[in-house]
Image 1 (cartoon, one colour):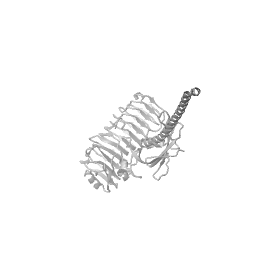
Image 2 (tube, rainbow, N blue to C red):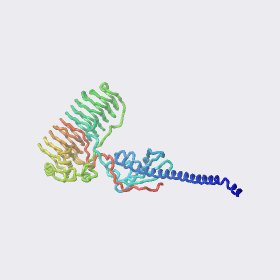
Image 3 (cartoon, rainbow, N blue to C red):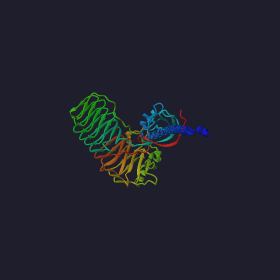
Image 4 (tube, one colour):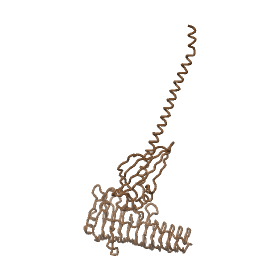
Amino acid sequence: MIGRLREERGMAMVVAILVVFVVLILSTIVVQQSIHNVDQSGRDRDRLLAVDAAEAGLNNFYNYLQTTPLDEIAAAPYTEASGPMVVELDTAPTTAGFTATAVYYDEAGVPMDPATFTNANHPSSVYVRSVGTVDDGVPRTMETWVNLTPVYGGFGAAIITMNGLNLVNNLTLNGYTTNDADIYVNSGNLVVNNQPDIFGSVYVVAGTASLSGNSNIRQNLWANGSVTINNPSMVTGSVTSSTSSITVSGSVGGNATAGTTITGSANVAGTSTPNTIQGPPPSQPLPQIRWVESDWTDADITAPDQPYVVVPFTDCTLARNYILTNPTPPAGFSGVVVRIDSTCALNFANNTSVTLNGNLAIVTDGSIAFTNKNTWTGAGATRKLFLISAYRDGLNCASGTYDITTSNNTDFLNADVFFYSPCTINLNNQNKTFNGQVLGGTVNINNQFTLNYVPVKVPGAGEITGFDQDIAYIREVVST
């Protein structure tokens, strides 16, 4: 009996070793499972991060289309041909990114070459494909189809003219935010006499520039041809002649750079650089503002303003009598368009007074004239007043049939005024300052005239500054 008991000695150690072995096996399984879960979690994270990166590519493209002017989109369309949009995202511990490409389509659904984009030839929709990646992980791909509506901005100049500009006695042209009341003379010459004071730059794209009297350009003057600055005229900024000479008996506060000679360098505060041929100055062509009714009645185009109600006429007398009733736009409309489908002359006689109870646009195929004292006043909030002789092909501007003319004491109060004629605009004496822009084939500004430059958005006109978007679909597709 005692011998048998002695044979059971050491069993406790055996059991203990077995228990330790079992615990070791279980611990190994737990560790392996934990490692598996961590790896799986990492893969799930990378998978989700790749999807998020692909979606970020779509969102980035939406923002790009909404905030980028059309000319910049044309220069960087991010197509397969031009090169995709590639962005590395700020993620950790793994690095994510996306590669996005686009295909642009016209109204008929035909692919477009972005190099052909213009205001009149812009995309109506776009397909965007975005591939999200995380380090060396499997890529994920998202795609979207977006219908596009162009957003038009105002014209970026106080005065735009095609055929020359004459500025005479006591003109003051004030800037909008800074000294940004710029003038673009696309062809013809700039002639400035007596006391014009221009708080902006002047660009004479194809002609010459001549300053006399106490005129002052507070920024830069750049002409393709010769520049003459007669005493006591001055340019606060720099002066450039791309192809010809600069003559200064007045003063230049900045540099002078000429294609040929510079006479009067002692009157130039900065550096004088002769014999330096350059390209022409920047241009902003006179737009072709045609009558397109949907531009004024489509809320997507008139936004942020509400649409306009159109009141048609073929007789200028009837149109004038209607305007003199001070029309109020109906509920849901921001203004009234008086559309005159005739080459008749719309004349507002002496002592005319008009109250703008909403925005008012006069869009005519003929002329507009204000005789002596006229007062147009915005009621309540600042109103917009559009005075437009619509563009058509083949107009005979020498006839005077399409001109806009203000006479002495024409005042525009509490209103932003937009003048447009493809022919001639004549602006004469005024008692009060007015806010707005002047765009004409030829612009003549005469005595006692003050303009505060304010960009006025014309529905359907101006440069396309981006696109509103209607997303047709967003979906994930198989990566290839």
